[in-house]
Length: 95
Image 1 (tube, one colour):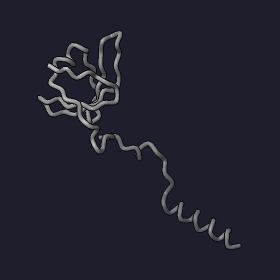
Image 2 (image 1 turned 90 degrees about the vertical axis):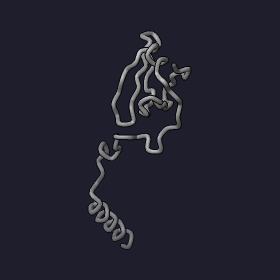
Image 3 (image 1 turned 180 degrees about the horizontal axis):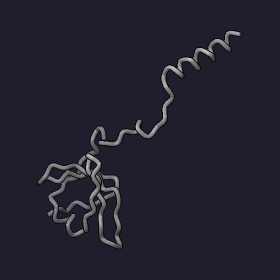
Image 4 (image 1 turned 60 degrees about the vertical axis):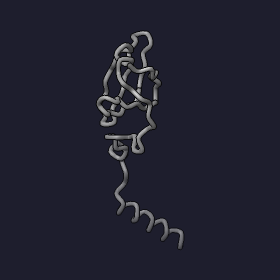
């Protein structure tokens, strides 16, 4: 049994499975906790189930973004285009 309370934003390890996860939501009215594993999977637990798990609080993983790649959502310009723009700006500054 765990005596570790769920806190949004904190990371935990299930000592039985070795899985690391973050608490991402807490619904006190429904008595549920939403957790997200390092691999991105989301799971909802009821509060009673939480306290039955063998948990320990841990530091956030070094690369806590896990499966999320922020670069996928951003629209970067092509590097060649950037160097062409830099060249044009440099030419304009020389004039």
